[in-house]
Structure formats: structure tokens, C-alpha cells
Length: 494
Ligand SMILES: NC(=O)c1ccc[n+]([C@@H]2O[C@H](COP(=O)([O-])OP(=O)(O)OC[C@H]3O[C@@H](n4cnc5c(N)ncnc54)[C@H](OP(=O)(O)O)[C@@H]3O)[C@@H](O)[C@H]2O)c1
Image (cartoon, rainbow, N blue to C red):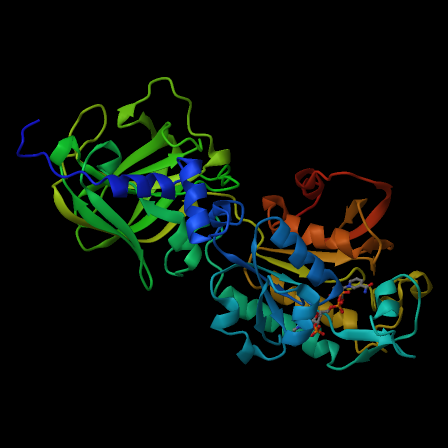
């Protein structure tokens, strides 16, 4: 190395980089004490949740509040559509995102409610209560199986069960995007979380003096800086902290970036090991100066590399456990080859999104309806054997008839859906085996806890797509359910 290309190396930046990525836990511990920051893993991106939001309508209800709890416990971001914010706070606590809206008022189902949604779970219902009044906590109504003469209070079933559901479906449809894709980073929706995930990782870690930054702008992210080849350096990069838990991309074909570059060739790395300095799976891509383009990267085309050297005999990437991403501009390609589209100096790569593509579409709208919706007026039905809602459908404002029309609006919408028709709902603990049926003939009961879990599981099962099912509980307690198998027994709607 000549004197000419030796430049002042920055120890401080070196330590900062390693601290950001938690390479030396002791340094992080010291930093936390001095800056009284929370334990750093609170900052770790949650790979289970993806970036979109699940909108829960009817979140203050018996099933809805349990859906919210379960979604949060399983790492999803949740937004609750509520009518009364004070009631919602006391039911749902302070940790959930609440938006005020009413499904019977389409003007309230606006951008604030719908932006960035990945799916909707709808557990709304017209208010039914015993004629002689309910106890303050709606204990009689929640009883489910015990018979109290019921009546509708407040809005009509036509307005809530049909028009309201249809309004929600119509509003959501405008915001739900292509389902064979999973958004990993959506930079069009800036957030604190995005800022905390990405950090610069330049050749300073090897003695170089290149420097870069990752800026979250209004609608994009910008990876920009200066690459210098001094001190035998020549790369700048940004990397995410490790996801916890890792992201499961099995079932997808690859990842897709939407970028605007400067004509240079960049690299992306995916890692499946949390170790700081391990094998990365890399792909080089060319940008077109000042033009937005999509870069499609099949997993099969990723090259395993260790510090820019290809690793022979390395297995293919394990798509089940992707734990970090890295973007890089480097003087080098692989194994000492030079990047033909590299020039030292300033650079910029702007990003709109990073997505997984080529996956099986998942349900994006789960509607909790009711067993019995097709039974009122069905020839041959013996009303004496039917549950109260079927027998009393007319007195209850045609509740089941309007629920069926609400279902129809979802089936006709083109949104991938699951329609769940529970038998009588109870406040029992649940944990029972679930019996699925189609054709709307079963009677029985089922716990609200189990229905809430079924709603959440439906969002994860490609086989739950475009299915209408009835459900009741069986006799046996179960520790776990094979959801894929259970859904496999069902036929998609025509
Ligand atoms: N009870 C049973 O045995 C049974 C059996 C089968 C199926 N089901 C069905 O299962 C589903 C869930 O039942 P559940 O017991 O959880 O119901 P629930 O406790 O009565 O909850 C209903 C929810 O809907 C909300 N809601 C009502 N009108 C609304 C509107 N216009 N805009 C926005 N939100 C509105 C309510 O909000 P507020 O808090 O603001 O009132 C509440 O959060 C319902 O569709 C029900 O019909 C029930």
C-alpha cells in the first residue's frame, strides 16, 4: 500500500458500528447504562409480524378482543376499529392501536383506518340481548347456549350485518394488495421501527474510510454515502439487525426490490445465521440511473459467500429462518473479480420496498358469521330442533338472512377470504378439538377462545383461502391442532 492511499481511519465509527449491531454485548450494556435506554432487544425487529397491520373490526366484542390478544401474542401489528375509544381502552389496554370508525358509516372507513393493512378480521355483530335485559357485563348474552328470549337493540341487522360488512369489504379491497407477496420492508410507510432496524456497516470494520447512511425519507429509504478505496477498502453497506424471531419465507420463490439507483451494480445479502461474520447469500444487481425498477431475485440464484469469497458446497439458503438483510456497494464482485459498474465517490440507492414474491395467496379477510345462516326458509328444516337464531330469525329482524348477504358481499369481492360460521358461542376455556363442516347443517357449541384462535390461524393457511365453514367443538381436549390438515378436509367455495 502506498502512502498516498492511506487515510485517517476512524476508531470511533468502528466502535459505533459494532455496538449498533450488538457484536460486543458488553459495549451495549455500558451504552444502555449511560443512555438509560431500554434493553436493546426491544429494538429488535420482529420477523414474525411482517410489516403490515391486521385490522380487527368488532375488537371490543367477545370474539374480537380475544383475536386482538392472540394476534399481538403471535407478533402481528394490530389496529382496532372501535366506536367508543374509552370503552375500547378499558377493554383492550394501552398497547394497541385504536382507530375510531363505524362500519355502517363508510365515510369513517378512511385512510387512517385502512392504510398499510395486510388483512382484516371482522367480528362485528348487531347487538342482541335478552328481552328482560342483560347483566352489566352482558353475562346472559355471552352465555350462548342457555336460552333467554332475545331481542335486537340499537341498529338493525340489515345495517350492521349486511350493509356494514359490505362497506368494510369495499373499503378494505382498495387497500389490500397482491397476496402472493409478503411485504418485508415497506419504506413508503416510514416508521420509528424502520429507522431502528437498519444501520451502516462500511469498510471501516476492515480499516477503510468509506461511509454511508440509511435515511428514512417521506416515502422511500435512501442508502447513500461515499465509497473510498483508500486503506485497501472499497465498500459501503447497510444491514438490518437480526430479526427475532427470524422470518419464514418458505413457500416463496424469492425476494423483490423496488429501487432507483445511480447506474452502479449493488449487492443484496440474506443471512440465516445470527452470527456477525458468517455466510451470507448474495445477489448482484444493476441499477438504471434515476429510474425506478423492480429487481426480482429467485432464492435459487443466491450465491453463498463469506467475505466476498464464494463458499463451495454450501447448502441452499434455508428460507425458514432469514434473520437479516444487507445492501452493499462494493468495488469487488466475488473471489477477487472487480465490479464492472463501480466507481469510487458518492453513490445513492433509493428503495420503496423489499418483498417476498411467488408465495401461495393467503386469506386476507376473515369474517365471523354464524352457523344457520342458510337455514331460515330452507325446505324440510325442523325449526324445533334449530338454535334460537334460526327459529327467531324473523323476530330478530332477519338477522341470519342479513348475515348471509354480508357473507355474499365478501365472497363476491375478489378478496381472498375465510368465512367462519360458529355454532353457539360460549365463554368456556376452550382447548377442545374443533369439528369443521360445510353445507350448514351442524348444531353445537364452541368457545370464543377457540374461535379467536381459528381466526388468527386462518390468516396463515393457504388452504383456508375462499372457504366457508361451520365449526363446533368436539368432546376431546387437545394440546395443539394441525391446522393445515384440518383445512385440507374442506372444499373452496365455487
Ligand atoms: N352469540 C352467539 O352464540 C353466536 C353464535 C354464532 C355466531 N355469532 C357471531 O359471532 C360474532 C362475534 O360474536 P361476539 O359474541 O364476539 O359479538 P359481540 O360481543 O356482540 O361483539 C360485537 C362487536 O361488534 C362491534 N360493532 C357492532 N356494531 C358495529 C358498527 N356499526 N361498527 C363497528 N363495530 C360495531 C361492537 O362494538 P361496540 O363495543 O362499540 O358495541 C362489538 O365490538 C358475531 O358476528 C356474532 O353474530 C354469535
